[in-house]
Length: 343
Ligand SMILES: [Zn+2]
Ligand SMILES: [Zn+2]
Image (cartoon, rainbow, N blue to C red; front, side, top):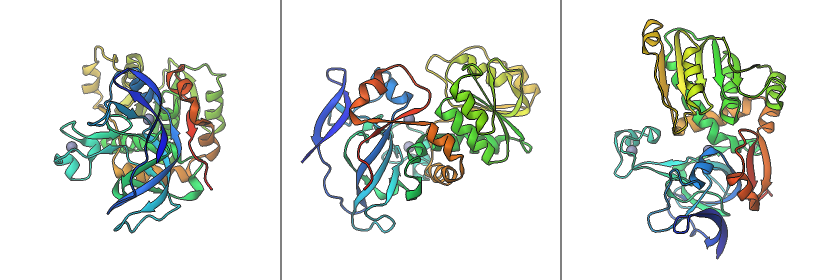
C-alpha cells in the first residue's frame, strides 16, 4: 500500500507531493501512527529554500513535517504505555549513534556530535504523510481533551526548555519577563512565563492596533511596539533579526538573563560585553527540547488560556502546502494541515 506525502526532492530541488510506501506493521517496541495534524513553521520554510536539511541516507526525498499530532493505530510487543486510539506528539530529534554523553543521559537536545537525526528536518522522514512508525520512547502521550491545540506541543517544548534554563540561570527571584517577537513562539513564551508567576510584556514590530497585539491584551498581557525602554529580569528573543537580539540584551535589568531563541542565520554583530560584566547578566542560546520539556509542554498546554491558544492555529487542507511553506512568512497564526480528522 502507498500513501500521500509532502516533501523535498533533493535531486530536482522541488517541493512536492509523492506516493510513498506505507510503514510496516510495528515490531517490538514500535508504534504505528496515523497522522492527524501537521504544523508548519519557519524551519519548513528554511528547508524548502535549501538552507539546511537532508533526506534519509538511502533516499533523495525528505518527507517534511516535524510538528505533528498522531493517533496510535497499533502498538507492537513490549509497548505497555500506549494503546490504539491514544494521541501522541513525536519528539523531533533522535539520539546520535553510538550515543554521545548527552544522548546517553537522555538529553538528545544537547547532542555533542551533531550526528543526530531530526524527523522532517535532517536524515529522517517527517509526518507530512498519512502514517508513520516510531519507537514508543520517542512519543509523548497527549490527553484527548487537548486534541485541538496539541499541535502546539512541539513549538512549546522549545519554549519550555528556554524558560527552564532562564529561571535556573537567574541569581534571585525574577519578577518580570520581556519577550521580543509576537509570533507563535513569542506568545507561547509569554504564556509560559506568566504560568510561573512573572509579569510579562511582549514587544514586537506589529503596531499597537495589530490583531495579535489585541489578542495579547485581551489575554491580560502588556503589548508594546518596538522600541521599548523597559527592562526586565528575564528577556527572551523570539524574533530573528540581530536588532532584536541587541534590543533584548539592552533590556536586561541587573542580574538579568537573556535567552536567544530566534536568531536568524545572519544575526551577528558587536556585543556590549562591559554592561554584561557590570550588571552580572547572562546570555544563553537554546534550541530543540528534551523529552522532559515535551512533557512539561503537555502539562502547561492544559493550563494556558485556551482562547489565545486557538487563535494561534489556522487549519488548512493537506494540499495547501505550497502556500503555507513557500508563501509569505506568517508568524501567527500557525498553518496546521489537517491530514485525517479524529473519529
Ligand atoms: Zn517547527
Ligand atoms: Zn549525541
